[in-house]
Image (cartoon, rainbow, N blue to C red):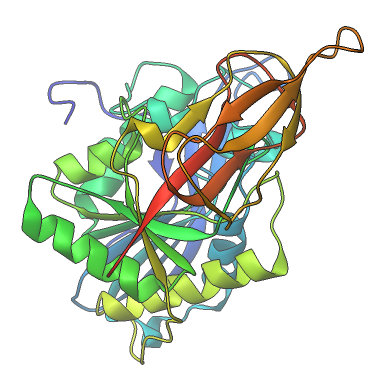
Length: 335
């Protein structure tokens, strides 16, 4: 935690300790050309009823990912206090400037919210938002659900995930909630770039942290939005905040044990996939061809799987650059 730093400049228009349903904003002063005394207004809903655990539900950590915001705007509209034992804090568009622009990072400062923790109260707009979550919202939470999907540059099999952690009781509780969420796939997740992540900030505080990847391509389908909606309710029931029975469908467990799960392009060009999401692939199998686009008649570059498993994520859309992640292969495991 950022001990000794200045107070956050963000002011909440809701009372997090009051019972009932409140809809309001996290208001961040932001002076700009078109509004000298302007603000970034981040919608927030708090639903509280007596004592009990707190769930912090977030979407729009990246602004071009939509299943989470769909589920959370709907939940904020429909959840009533009498359904809750404890507290639910809902922030459908965590990086609101990015969400409003439909971009992964903030158009204000190019900040990637999920690489900006612990943030700074006197930093950029993105760092100020991260700091507020770090020092105000995360300490309130027992359970954190942060929605992700592939955005405009990746497409995933729809899965819910948690991380392998040194604290095994915390890890086990997270995987219990992944199981309850009930996505078609459930993943023991490996991060290839964990520095500054919201996930890490929450887990280092001992919070039970669950995340998702629910499709991609910069849109949401009826299926993936439905998975997000039902999964959120399932998780809140399993966390003891909502009454009812978890309605989870069967799930296939996947593991990402090491860096061989990821395939990166070293070339630019037009990509042709030779396997589809959900296909079984073997190590050494050609999974994509990259055609140089500067002239015709050239041979494509073949990209091969480095691991045997299930084709879990792919690059989106059709042109790639050097360094782009073009494929993720996960290993099927038993629950």
